[in-house]
Image (cartoon, rainbow, N blue to C red; front, side, top):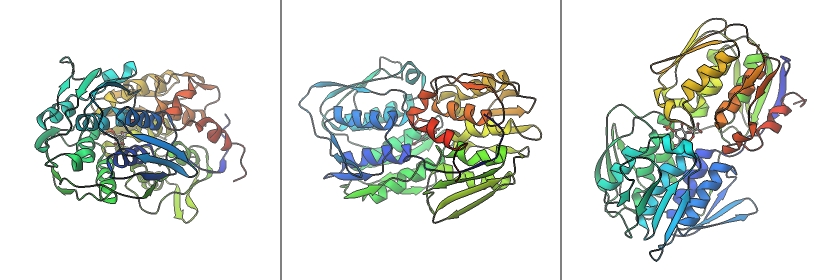
Length: 417
Ligand SMILES: O=C(O)C1=C[C@@H](OP(=O)(O)O)[C@@H](O)[C@H](O)C1
Ligand SMILES: C=C(OP(=O)(O)O)C(=O)O
């Protein structure tokens, strides 16, 4: 792809994190919920598949998906396919404990390597019966006993914020609700925790937070309909494109207010010398094609790291990304993968204890391997903005969150805006 300036308007699909939270809360609600403009992707379908196994039902309707509550089973054994979806692997075991089925969880080889043990331990402390063969990882089985006591529990959520979100999302259905006291290092991805609290409130729950302690009382959830925002993390490669090659990109439908971590991109654009204007049309980013060197702590917005790391290969000097040791437990070991792939095409990228040091150097074309990781596809695409001959391996793996990514990306180079 050429290093010509871009000029385009793009639409990105619904937020994975909001869609899968809305599906879980809808499945726990007292009546059907219409989830409007949801993401339709591998992770979202896996969530609907999990809810179906748990006795729920979802119908495609004109402007979204109508989700019916999960129902108790009659002691049968079912399987939940996790794929490599962290949200499904972390959010659905608590739901299984509420039912009366024995639910077997397993997925892609990669999900067996992702952390889940602290969550399973907390669920057992709250009254769940779980058989993980001592592995602390999938495959594991949850033997539903028709409900969960809940109550106080300690949780180390430092490897993934999703452990905490999982307990909070299901807590209204626990007999005593939940009081989670965090132990260990701070969880990453604070905006995703705020998103969990926000969605709980919108479905009628009354979560409270005091520092490292979270309380969700038991209660009924209900909501007629909920509209999902566009996914601002999926938007990341489009947002950074004008910084890399100049020009202007508008992301349609960017919300005025949001808990999504991708909203941080607006401040990144400004820090890197670009302009970011938010109005009723969306977010319009304008850049000049130069990228200053920066030091960034991405602990709160870790899922943006692959795209940001690729962008920083074009910087005018060495950059440092810190705060993201937990990315070693994402879809793949993202720190190792980014160091290997960005270095493989000429940059000098090395792992630090909690991030990446990126020393720009002349880049060349070649294969950018993607390790079955959607965000590595997006990182490879960003590199290809300025480097002729970058061939992104298995781009279809981006279907985890954005099946139409390649077409949307190509529109950057053909659209008149
Ligand atoms: O709750 C969520 O929807 C997510 C939380 C984050 O997970 P970690 O805290 O494990 O990084 C994020 O990276 C992931 O893409 C989605
Ligand atoms: C970490 C991610 O996904 P998951 O929901 O599988 O944890 C991600 O999308 O960057």
